[in-house]
Image (cartoon, rainbow, N blue to C red; front, side, top):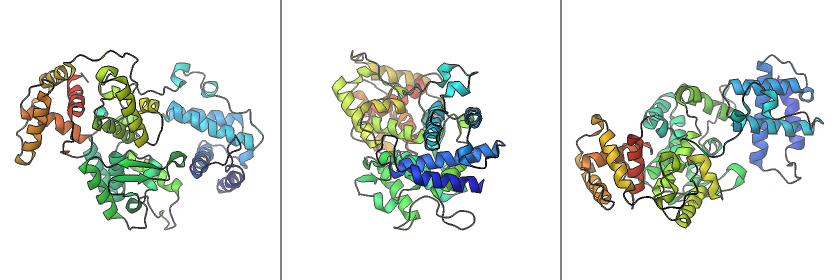
Length: 408
């Protein structure tokens, strides 16, 4: 297998620098296709195929890979991306038409199941799927403090796994924003530091590394310098150790990015569809602008991309009923478990009174202990017991109310 990987690396060195359209490929693109192809050939070896050369790849190998990915519960989008990388590779070796689409290799799977749906039908976030983020971070800390820091950073800034592993914490800190780089498509972006929790997280992560050091693991077991492939493999292995897999918890590491997207929308007073939000919550122009702002924080430029993270708004332009928030709060009051309604600690009293007063502006009249329960749920989405309220908090409180009011 080492010989095959060495040969594959030579092919990658020769071809991966140029896209199919003739343009120069980014470092991120070259890295992604290299990681994918090396993983595919190693998987073939595990499946019992003894290829002597990468050029010997045949259709039976592609079929075996596709079935293996499906059996291991890879998402449809991931399978399609991996097939596209194999298609590119086959063009390099003179077998350009060999790789077919997923339904060709998975004839027993309904075609509808193999169609990529870009809009999220339900929340992919950890919180919405019942995962206690703070508890998972504690489990991560017990395994590896560096891994715990990575999860905190992913929650706070919505980073992709590459961006977490290749982050230089001291370099990205621009006081009022997080300057993400080495991003997908090599498109740098500035992520606003909107909450005290984001500042606490970034300062914590900075305290763990040297000023010239990235956050990813620096050494492999044999003491040699860690590669990005090693870091990615360890990232997924660590996630599995704390129970973060589709099979166990119904979420993946990428779910933290979806959670950040939902949180970012709530900060600008937009309730995402995955949290019960509708098109009629505000004027369409305002909603479009706020979606664009969230999209930029995620490293995209189109507002439509937000649908992949927190669902699609319908085309209904009719404004919601004026008592929408009031009714949502009332439904939550009726559904809140008794154990969630607790006495308010003195240090939270001012915040609870402020939030309770804010609810009165939408004619939702509740006692402060109810407000505390709703805000505790919202705070947990940020991996903290209590998040200091922002300038406007109605959307966050209503989303929390929807969480309790909707049967699960």
